[in-house]
Image 1 (spheres, helix red, strand yellow):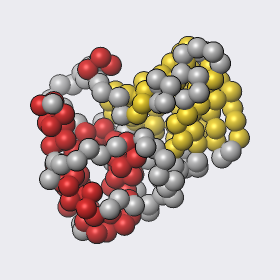
Image 2: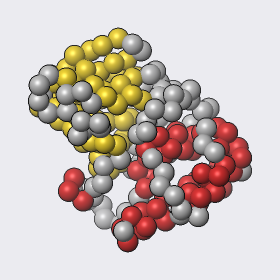
Image 3: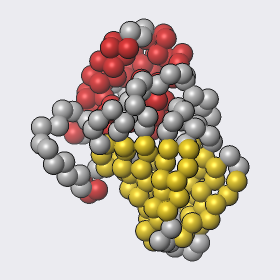
Image 4: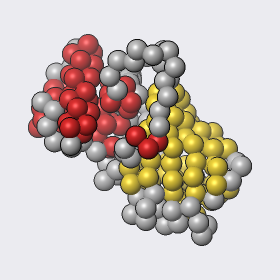
Length: 203
């Protein structure tokens, strides 16, 4: 519980700092990110339990990575993230999960995620801001990548890259567990405008 409280305080501080730096009021940030003002007020007071959908919307709107909202200052030049110490930000109905391991520094950061999809799991994502690209590297099993309604079956050993500014989804396929590494390549600079959202992430 103490670790969860500390993590929430870090998110609260980072959201408030980024909002202030961007010159956005609570009302304006809420409008752009499609998050209620009440939820934002609670979050900046380190209250509540924001889900992945809320974190993604806020990160997109503030021009940050999700992990930039979640992580404190990094002192070491080498960052080592252990999946065992990283809480899932999404869990599927059939046991799948997604863990955000870390985000690289710099003007165009890259998020590194570890995913597990079980057959029947489905993770739909809203379109991200223009310029965001994702890659999916399937390590074991099978999955289906859906982009703009078109299905792309992927199996172990295959890697897919695509622009993530369109509706997309990850589906567990086959008969066994699918494990994959996913990267989100973010463009430099702040988000220019809020993306169209479907509200389905992590809910």
